[in-house]
Length: 154
Image 1 (tube, rainbow, N blue to C red):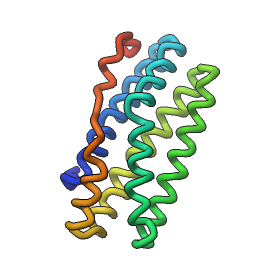
Image 2 (cartoon, one colour; image 1 turned 90 degrees about the vertical axis):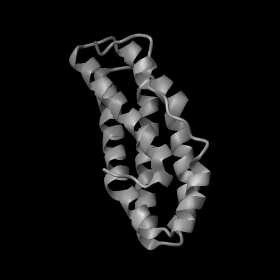
Image 3 (cartoon, rainbow, N blue to C red; image 1 turned 90 degrees about the horizontal axis):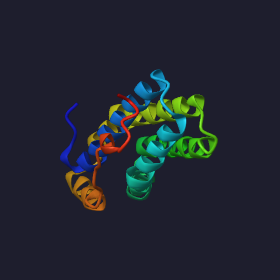
Image 4 (cartoon, helix red, strand yellow; image 1 turned 180 degrees about the horizontal axis):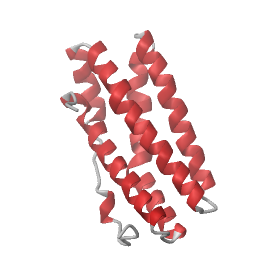
């Protein structure tokens, strides 16, 4: 899916998130060590997810009041962020079920943003608003979760 250049920082991080989902699925299928997979989740959370969620929440709220459709989608995004954050607490007692729940929620969330929310943003915002949004997101960087030192998915 062709994404507007202004949303690239978020979409690049989404790509890494989908890679994490794939690696976790493989790890669960192989019955890899749940503690190792939980450390993997903690690392991607620390290196990318927390910053990603915060950036979305702070920069996209500006348009949620101005445009009703975006406000509705923003509220759904916030609810999904909350569900994923609640999963972090469940992972304090690592289990395959908690890991599966985490990667399913993350996958669902990324698909929602890429298929519904971002296209709505692109269709609604003016070029000037997209440029302003891009400046708010320019600090984001993306990692490669496959650099995790223990290749539990292999």
